[in-house]
Length: 262
Ligand SMILES: [Zn+2]
Image (cartoon, rainbow, N blue to C red; front, side, top):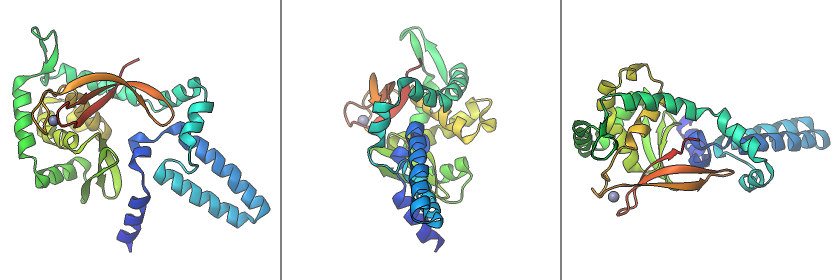
């Protein structure tokens, strides 16, 4: 019974609008509309029906990101930029990424190259990372994901241009592609040795560290071609933001996406 419930929940879940991708302006607007509509149902039909309507709406918003079709467009049109920016800042994710990112850059993983006049992965780290990627078959990935998330059951899934990890029926990690997740899992043993604070990091901080290191990858793990770094504007559901994208021009694998710092 429990597993049937879990599979219904997973079918309803829209990872592209929930978890890390949840858009808070849309979520709050939807909760607000649900409360108003349920109050009307409570007043004009019956209070219990209004209560049921509210609970159902909140469950759908939790699982799918929004309930009213077209909300992303509504918030983009009618919420002032200031409000949308405030919501963006309220998530405070960028501040945490900056802290972890400094630790990664100060570590033995990254060095300054006079020739490139830029930071790059230390060669030994790069070579070991690629070796680990080649060794990372399904069994290795699953085993490391279990230990990373401290879960008994993990599953790597793909849907609508995102790859994500479910651990004990909760989405815990999300990336642009499966090769990006495999690359992250492959570098875990290296990060745990090279980053002094690794053991004290939360799962989110570990995830940020993996994302930061992945931005320094220069060969596509799927086909071996040189990855290219671009800066583009990405339309999320109700804002547009500048991001760096790291992708493979040959096999089109999307490896990474990082917000451009303000
Ligand atoms: Zn490629």
